[in-house]
Image (cartoon, rainbow over all chains, first blue to last red; front, side, top):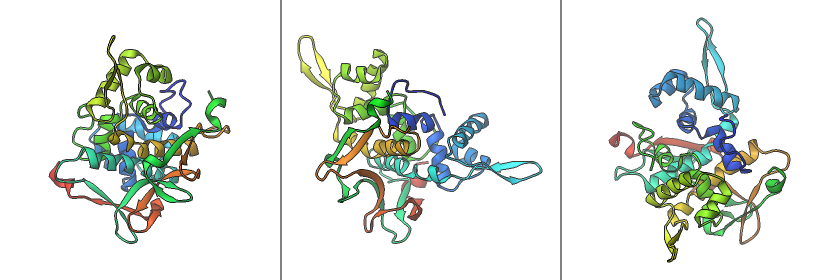
Length: 152
Length: 152
């Protein structure tokens, strides 16, 4: 955790960013979703200082997003498989990716594609009404929830 | 823009975070999605220093996420309505929110609810196959795209 980066904000976006919003953290989760598990694999992918990577991995383990499992005894070595809670972050991270694909990508096209493994068709991140199915952003309403006042 | 925060990363998540990943920026977009348009409204909601808010608003205008429209002449005053490109960020931001609702929220429940304005049912952010409809994360595959090598 980064502590209370957003003091006074009673907001689940702010709380999530306090866990994953530090520089490089989202890209570590991206790599974990792509199957990276070991320190040196993350380090090669990201090219960041080892002490920064150590710090970010420890925070992600503390937040329950990565696990820490010993895979060798002498010398002791650990790997960092992603947890179920971490896998759920694929929705916001791939939604950020596809926004970047649409608005920030050059003529070469997107670096990554997301497909439905079963049928091969493209997968997008969308708003889905539990009753009607996928709906456009213009049809959603953000309303006060039960925790809005109590937790301030 | 924050410049190249993630030098060497050919990744649309990294590119998006270079635009919206700075502290407070995502919460300014949240407030813009909730209907805030004026400097003082953002300032009251976030409680941040005016120079920080000015800086973040200018970057969001430069990135095409907010617009800048004069609403008064003497003295000149501007407001910052969200653009269509900005509205698309509701998908990743609400996906971050709902992850926080599930994993980081106290017993009072979520501060905000997302509903389908037409039918009133709950709206979630999900992976949606263009052929099959909503699919679980376990069924998605992230594959190399056409821009993976060219842009490195």
